[in-house]
Amino acid sequence: MRRRAVVVIALTLAVLTAAAGVWLAVSAFTAETDAAPSASAPPSASASPASPVTADDYCYVEAMIYYRVKEQELAETLLRKDGIEAGALGFATGVAARNEDELEDLRAWYLSWADARPAEPPTEGPCGGHGSDHAQMPGMPSWSTLQGFVDAQHPDAERRFAEILQAQNAGMIALIGVILEGDPHPAVAESARDVLTQAEADQEALQGILDALP
Image (cartoon, one colour):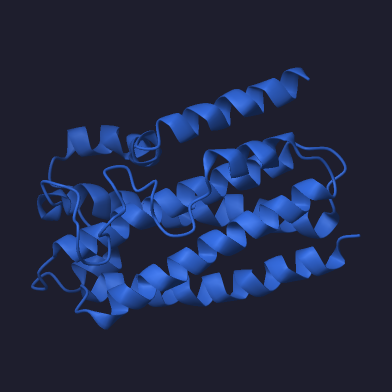
């Protein structure tokens, strides 16, 4: 009961203060930025220094941070539960590990491209309607959906986990489609294509988790 209470409190804070997701995602990078105010972008971004960074590019970075932070929270919540199927555990473990690497690049872009951030939440374009904290992005789980997952045990926990991530991946795929239809920064285009490939593979893996449940 005590462990479950901790998880409930953690997810409650995450939902009620959705903007904290980006802050948490970049906080590990802050000390380095203080030491070197001109934070360099990742290698793929610096390869095209003449390419202008637009508000849509920044939108992609910020949205992806929210998607990845939420995905990581969901995976870590599942890993705290008892009696979870091996396939779901393996998938959640992989998600938690790989997101750390991807977030490193996203943190660098988030800080070094800050000048491209729009002054107000956009009403049009890829991030139109996402709100100031991106909580309204396509596929982002509602409070009631998250609460149901927190309360769930095997096999309902695996089912809810897979269904939430399938919806989130579908939203992410839709966003990437809009980004790639535009004229993104070369680094964003490369990242978006990689994310699209991963998201499509994840959809198959998540469906496999669902199909294996009793």
